[in-house]
Length: 452
Ligand SMILES: Nc1nc2c(ncn2[C@@H]2O[C@H](COP(=O)(O)OP(=O)(O)O)[C@@H](O)[C@H]2O)c(=O)[nH]1
Ligand SMILES: [Mg+2]
Figure 1 (cartoon, rainbow, N blue to C red):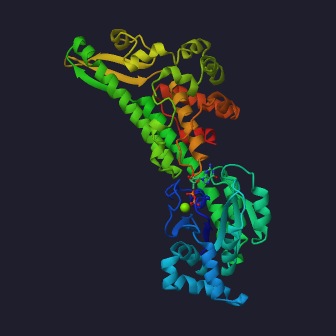
Figure 2: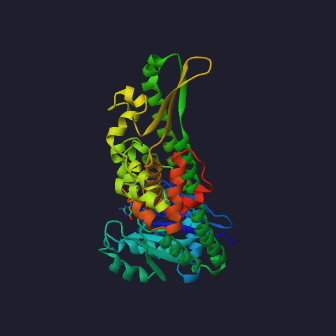
Figure 3: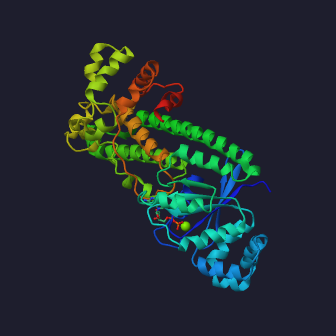
């Protein structure tokens, strides 16, 4: 059988499940503060486009000394040892007395390679020797992984101890190891069993391609979001201006609700692209200014006044337009959409610069109150900035990480100026077009370089 299978074994609470989750690049693997979350061996199939392999998450050793004593009683010769382990896992009495050890040794007897995990921030002790000895008895190819959970204090002494039992000893932190390090580990796996090398090389290549595809899919999600948010408007038929004034707060509410929901949906799509499904990653827990329309925060996500003013020069727009562009992201504008600061009369009849509001006479009498679209030139940048930022966080987040995502701000301007000059120009022109409700061809390709 050519399927590569790795059983992740060790003491409870050393990060075994975390390693499985990070390598599988999926956060559905159970990780817990409590010991013994994994009670039976869980097989996680890592399927890639043209290949795949299996990781077996195991419960962890509970009574290694007793198990080793049992094995010693049932075998004396080196060539009998794997057989003794097999007898152990099939023994009904052992299955009752040592369920965890039976569960973790079974995949090894079936041919899985061993990934033995220890914590580099806790001292080595002789109690681990029984575990390593038992693993050696299985005769399977093996590798030791030192997970420096809190610090690196005992990494060196662990390295010396592990070298006595394992040919390969590596440091691997499932919380911090970036994509490159994960690939490196996978390459090291390929050396464990020669007959798995080809499959695992293919997995490696598939993962690289898949990551690029994730980036492209994210760009598509952002492009559709930008288009939708920049054109959205709502309207209602009304009899007269008085009625228009009375329904205005409702329109504002409905408009902003839809816009926020639309952004939220794209973020959910983005997280799904990266296989992050944990509920802790909801919008409320993102710690980013939760409101798309909190204009005081706009400079954090979009461009600031000075940066906006230079956009005209880059795109070749008339100099006079620069002053107009500078009117952006001031809380004064919030009134139009938050329903707060401006008297709605002036907001309704066009004094604002954030949202277009119109009251159109209808041919058969009466009026149509129109709210939207947003006409503020900073708006597309704000949408891009928020999304680019979340993409940066989520694409680098290891699947073992279960806490609330820490969100800091980004400098969109800096990201834009790091692009090629022609790309920058095209991007600014596209933002200008979007805010004028004009279509942009191939928007996703244009914004792709911002999703690094
Ligand atoms: N800070 C930190 N926590 C870790 C690391 N590895 C595991 N943990 C935490 O340690 C606990 C046990 O991890 P888990 O993967 O369930 O260990 P297992 O019992 O060996 O499967 C969980 O709360 C993890 O979040 C690490 O490298 N750094
Ligand atoms: Mg576990």
